[in-house]
Length: 376
Image (cartoon, rainbow, N blue to C red; front, side, top):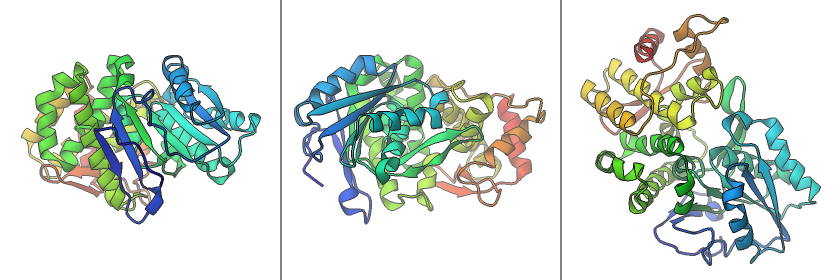
């Protein structure tokens, strides 16, 4: 890959055996306007910015002006904002923009927004003309520490979250800390869920640091956010580098997500933010780990307290409805279509001792007991 600007702090993602598909993550303040942020990317006659109705008015012009120094024509597509729009219809708006502007296989896409924009832009890039390059510019904490890194792209289906997509790596990830200044408090808390998860699965020192510095993160202290983003990206880069396509190890990054995705699908996408569902899902997964004898009660309470301090829900919603009045069974139905499920068997990311994760099934009776206990 071409040289990239060193704007510390920065992280370089190294994916084993992928050669030129390795890419840098740049983390810093005011990177959208910084000279050199977009230097060294492939040449193209035109590029397309994909954003949404919330982020575009704030940052699209700044990005447009920066890209205009390198590209003759910069187009923009603005999508509706929200998880509820992460579907085929909205995805086609990106293809409409590409085709209507006569974009070719050299055209590069720039995903300017949160996880929904990043996932859909990456999926569109993977599909358009069977693959065009793209760059991730995540503008939420959740997308900066998680969804923009690792090449998972896709859309939701009414029966399951992120069930349709592709593994497709970006050329670069640009995390501009300035974009977090306009992030609503609720979105910031949602992002903290994905920061917190890295402690239980991989790094006890980082978990301790989050506990000690949570208030600084909530107050948007730049140095604290920069470190949290950098350490999160380092951990994810290490995992993804060993298992790009989630054949084994990478699944540990889904701690809390099996329960969390069920909450999102059961309540309707957008009712809870993804990070809110994951935060509550981590409490449920930790409780399941305790029930199976892998974790002590004190650590479950410690994790639950941290998640609650971050402003995230720790009591699970009831998902029973007219079609399935049994709340626990409704959860089970939704979790059976989780991507980690195998032959209809639900597989959970569990904490096996402190800061070690494992992926395995659990007895249905125990899972149902945990669901009901966490919904009380």
